[in-house]
Amino acid sequence: MTLATRLSGAGSAPVILIGPAPAPELLLSAMRAGISEYLPEPAAEADLRAALERVRQRRGLLAPAMSSPQAEGQAQGQAGRIVLVLGAKSGIGTTTVAVNLADALSRQGSGRTALVDLAQPQGETPIFLDLEHSYTWADVAANIGRLDATYLESVLARHHSGLAVLPAPEFSAEAALDPAVLRRILELLRRSYAQVVIDAGTGAGTDQGEAILEALDMADDVLLVLDLSLPCLARAKRFLEAVRATQPHLLPRLRLVANRKTSESDIGTGEAEGILQQPVAWAVANDYKSALAAINQGKTLTEADPRSALAKGFAAMARDLCRDTSTQAAPDKAAGSLWARLRNTPLGLSLSHRAA
Image (cartoon, rainbow, N blue to C red; front, side, top):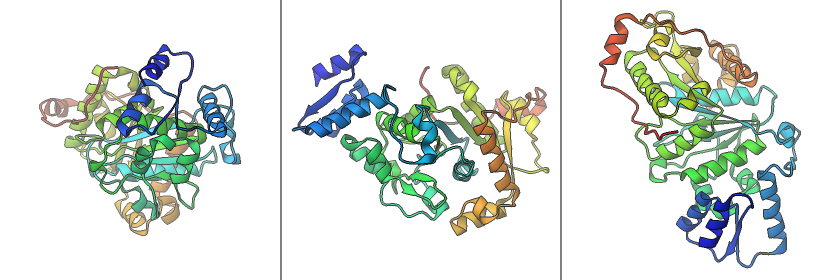
């Protein structure tokens, strides 16, 4: 193992580890060190050839063979887009945004879409979609020696719309996902899917913190969901301050989603933009009745009420992301007395941050 780690650290050539089944923690250490593949001993020639093929695919030396026309874009070696949906606080509809955005992206016709549930303490995407499933990311983590594109495809749950879902375990607080395993999962998904949406929950104060930071690093778009209330804006402000201080490279990828917006809101989007010093990319209408009805039916908003403002809003959001554009406007600098109140509010995301 020491020699394999040294060779991997040298950088140029891929390293395939062959040997007796190692302990899970040893295999994780190998993955973190950059070992390309592990094969149990004795390794058959066919298995070795397959491992070499996977290594070539990962290094872009050979475009992966795709069996479905929907994945045509990925067949040309184009990496899929990772969209991470993160809530500034709990209870503001983060999963509603993630599920319905993933569904809208899946219906855009730009390629296949996968949805990964990292929310804690218990992900709810299968409930929102009335989706039966046999496996979760905990099963993937427990079988990292088998983790390749074929195995991952076999554990994904399939929604009738075509959306592929990797659910969270029932009590995900008891099964933290190793960042190295998550990186491998996302690398495999983005080679087979045009869009990968991650429901990261609040990401705050959970065992998934390190895994979510890994996902943040990999994401092409980070959607921070918030509502226009002072406590939520306070948490969003703390998060943005932490990003500016420790991960400024994330700022161009970060977009604000104002959820449940009404014309009667005491705080408008312009005032929120001034407080956060960041434009609001999308304002999602407050139609709690339609959203709740869709959840209770186990349907997406497009299925439950395609004419609703919510369904149309998520379709527009998906179109914007597919075009790599946004509806961002210049922030309103005049936050007035609300800014002073927010500066002294002792609230904030407890999500840890590491230096870029």
